[in-house]
Image 1 (spheres, rainbow, N blue to C red):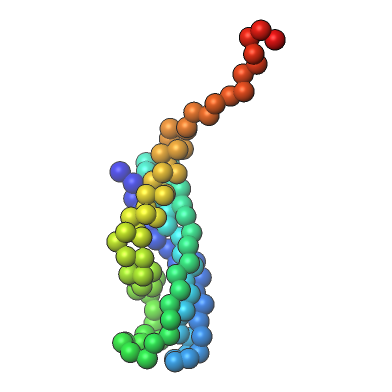
Image 2 (image 1 turned 90 degrees about the vertical axis):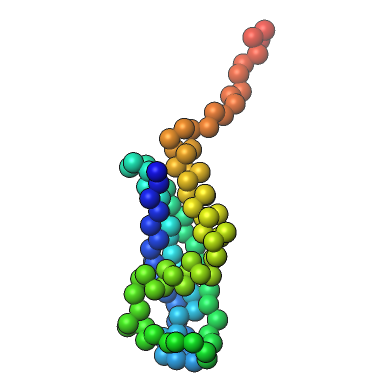
Length: 107
């Protein structure tokens, strides 16, 4: 079974409509299957809005921001990224067979 962990690597902000309003999050999804690790990075962009609850930048938690990222991706997006990481792990554990250019037997 693979354990997936989301992390936030960077955040970009603007100062309108509020100071340090997050508009871009650079994140990484890492999968670990019994010590075999793979990851993928991505970027999620957000539009400033005047509605909803505003959390000051210094009060944000990584879990809160990861929640924004996952909400923006939706269940299908999350599943696609996890499948990508799982595919990398599967390829590490069971490397695909590549055809070889074999010399002709009559040469």
